[in-house]
Length: 402
Image (tube, rainbow, N blue to C red; front, side, top):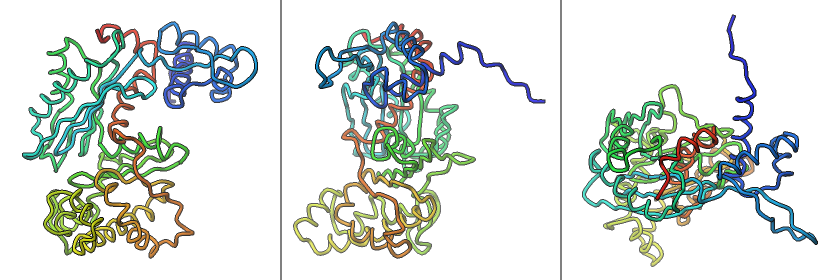
């Protein structure tokens, strides 16, 4: 017989507090009546939960902006100055960071480019610490630091903070969480939990929670950097696979007679639509932005080269549509840059295998100015607070910005 631990009143309360705070974090201000409708709890229970969250300082009740005559009703909203996270998007040629408040407001951003090859582990750690110090200068005094989230282009074991394989960075079995935590502790005296995540998976989370896939059941997010990664969110859960390798979409073989890939195989999708492939196919250009400028100005070689890239994008997307049948496909990174110029070629390839009337997938661009992966990194950093608000706020008092 399987024995299960009984669920006590504290467990139920913790669960319900988490539900209320997550709705406010993801959906913005809501009235108590709206919270009753969304949670299915009775009004007195919601009132008690809101009161507890108000006492912690993480939410507040303010007059709403409704147009009814008389005194406006109160709405509940997160108090942005109460808690924040630091999020990073670590790429081959740059590191982007942001301080983001509870509720999802971007407090400050920072970026560090790198032009002489990918970041080594020590260099990446040093840059993250430097960026954190800069971001802290913009955080409201007294705001509790509740998490650090880092997006990385590779296979991640988030439970132990291990980067198992990041081919384009040249990293293999790196305990990056340990590196970052140690250095943050050295500089700040203490640090909240550092969480790592695959960049494309985090992009999928962001688009599902706050972006183009908000009302969808399934979202595929493609990150275009040096290579191509993919994240698949089904019913709000990221598909990780038995060994964590699900979503390595850039390494599905589409052209067995094609180019060698960093993974050791030949003809992977990213060898046909990655940054190097685009530069190779479109002429002697130093960057994708230059290719796009040439296309706009009518350069025949750039136009034809980009059309070829569009066909390969369409071939890969056809495989994804037939495999996952997603509601939404979000193209990030350089794929977002080139898609407006190759849309016809992409749709033509998809239509060969699935007529448009059979294809439900909306192909769209990222929803966030700071990037979907950075938003997704902030969401995993907020996870502990959203799962247990009272405990995490108490724990974070010593980590308040000052």
